[in-house]
Image 1 (cartoon, rainbow, N blue to C red):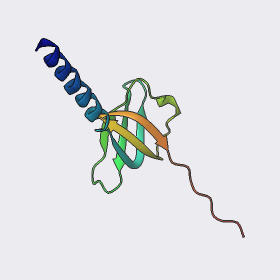
Image 2 (image 1 turned 180 degrees about the horizontal axis):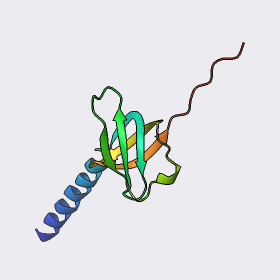
Image 3 (image 1 turned 120 degrees about the vertical axis):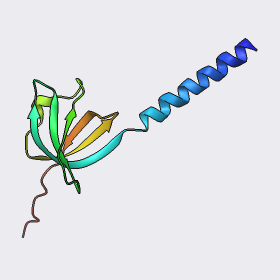
Length: 94
């Protein structure tokens, strides 16, 4: 019986880990300001009426992020886990 409970507990823990990994949101918008010292960014999400100040995970290379850059963020638990700057599309050549 103890072994069964231990197996059930392990299975439930794995399910919780999987669901928290799937809970990350991807948001597109513009990075308005970068504060490297505080490790935060001010971000204007597409369609939002208000800018947000978001904490940035230590694993993100914040020094590479530029203000006024279009970007897609991966946010998990209110913390930015990844920032992908969107490249400007060039006009087709004639």
